[in-house]
Length: 127
Image 1: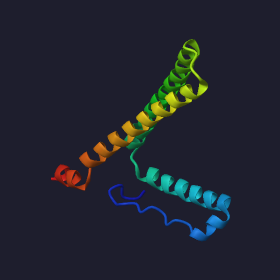
Image 2: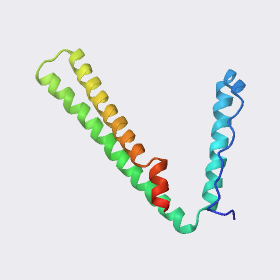
Image 3: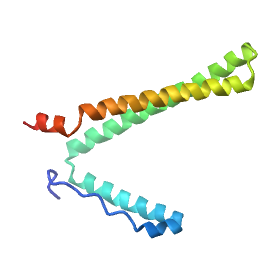
Image 4: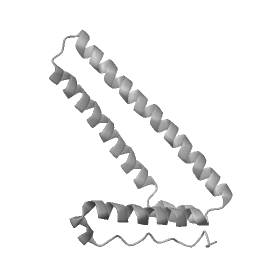
């Protein structure tokens, strides 16, 4: 087993020439990604693997909940549009605005998180 504290370099990307055959490029990238993932998993302790697995199951569950809520929001918005006899373009516009708000919030939250957990914060936490 490798030392879990040593950094594991990601595999080099395939040659850009493979983009002339996109399916081959995608397969090559996927294979390298799987091999890299397996390498990382091989250095984790059983406790770290269990923690990772629990995290993945939890995030997958919340993702399913979020997708279900999104479908429910679309259905309710459609029913509101039908009840108020809106033109279908208004319904589409409302969906686009909702998507833009959600996307904007996601970008904003991610940028806030990355600023809080940047390299300077990592150095402060290590001391």
